[in-house]
Amino acid sequence: MNAGGRGAAVARALAWALGWLLVLLVAAPARADDTLGFAVERHELPSRLCVDERTRVALTLRNDGALPWSAALGDRLAYHWLDADGREVVREGRRTRIVGVVLPGATAQLQVRVDAPADPGRYTLVWAMVRDRVRWFPDPSGAIGHARVAVEVVAGAPSLGFSIVEADPVAAPAGERTRTRVVVRNDGCATLSAAFGDALAYHVYDGDGRELVHEGVRTPLPALPAGAQVELSAEVELPPFTGAAWLVWEPVREEVAWFGAPRQGDARTELVADAPALAWSLQRELPAELGGFAGAAASIEVVVRNDGERTWSSADGDALSYRLFDAEQRPLSIEVCARHCPTRSSPANSCSCRCASSCRGAAGRYHLRVQPVREHVRWYGPAADDPEGWDDSVRPRGGAAAVRMVDRGHRVANACVGGALDDGARRAAQRRRRHLVAGPGRSRGLSLRRW
Image 1 (tube, rainbow, N blue to C red):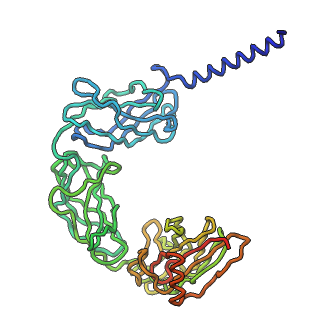
Image 2: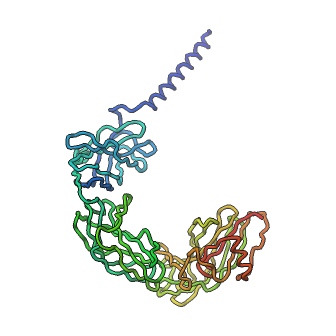
Image 3: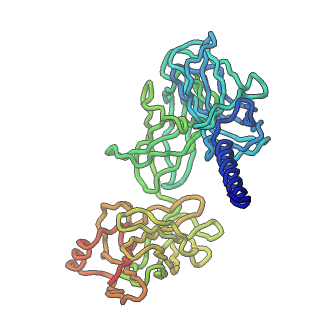
């Protein structure tokens, strides 16, 4: 072999060796004395937990190593439970993902889920970090009291329990928020606190037991030891329709569990929704059928009347809006069409707006629903002359219609049909499609299709 050939062979051998060295450096597990490190600066784990209690703990971590952390690298906060003799009884505590990228020296705020041991006794919780599929971090640095926490686990009643001692009836305009007096007693074993995600919430049911509101407004609970009670000024948002209903109180530990039924008594209270302060009605039928191209805007004029007790104003965020659904009734968007015109509309007055709705998807059939909204506050709710609102089971009153939009380059067929269909045409239209309606002209179908 000549000198040139030997040089090329040596170069290939060196390149091969360097390549394998790089692979080993990247893939090899980190050593115990490497640059991964962490400290617990602050935590809110209580010194007393109940058997099998599940709680949420606010915690601040600091990156004391020389390498960044991230969920993509598999970095998680975990914990171990040790018994009174120092024996490890729970090795794999719940793991909490690191949020974002945490650079060396930076801190991260976490909400950590902690599950208490299944047996009563004195325990020590040891915070730990792990890089999944690589290894555990070294023991945390910093104050030992933050890294290792003495906890007493006690037996007794189930950890989360409550009773409603007193609750005033709720009455306010439909769709509005109000406050009412509620006295809550902690009938569980665990201490309750907003720091653990504990809040008083509610559900709303009609007279037939159908759930109308599942996720009621939360009122944070103060620190409440087992057996103690507190009087709250609880916030309630009434449903957007008038009439009587039942409000059922139930606390929740956010991201952990609902409390369930009360230990004693009844958690129900009467709720009466009076005539809404923000109310409206449609004064002119929407066009029975419109046409256009996919991706283009379909423009319709909407005339609405202020049937409430409050003046509408663009300064208050009042706007005419629409909701767009696909043929399977799945929501696609919530868009603002136009501000109310004129700028202010007092009660009993009507105003007209031109609403441009855009179907951004492919050709197909869509449904459009019109309704006013007070931005960052709430939707107005059903029209005053249509209390059943957007109930999908309500048969349209005043005519079925469709808006057809097609791909560019294809002729629009039956682009605009008259405002009201006769009975035969209505039945045919209903066989072709299912409409989501809220009374005459409030819901219109959009069809984007090839011809």
